Image (cartoon, one colour):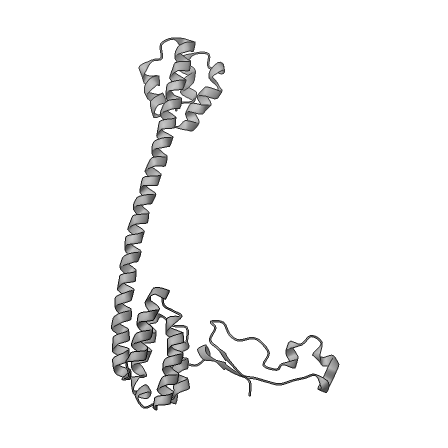
Length: 227
């Protein structure tokens, strides 16, 4: 009996009849190979519906739904009594499935430790308690590493920006010196007020003066550039 277990975020829209997935299936009428599969759309069940069933499959579905990590741990606690009532074989099946669900959501470096806790703890309540402590600790460590990484990246970005700004400022200073020398060659002495304005001008303004240097007939013509 074909069964499709689906735990995706979006609603299942594919046909549940095989022949309807074939192009022009109507042409072959009753001779088209056909069968239907049972669809189990995990995320369409409510938490309450699954808790009421009190069995192995419902417990797995409840933990496999797309929820935040904290909610998984909360649900695991709510299932502790149900899991305690499972027989040894069912517990082994649950652990095997739960490992796949849980480990897929964890960074690779944390998986070995979590897998060991699931395998070694025979009592469900002890396993849940140890998992919660370990995972919360790992999450805090991950958060600390993230903060440190963010600070380091921020400092590096700041230094990089500072270097870029310094280079740009240096280039502006160099262009400014060139502009003053060109003006001195053309007009002789450059009044102090214009020297100060040129020193404070940005690169674009300075390049405008350089481009128009031959059209500047008197020193006062600089006023239209140095506003």
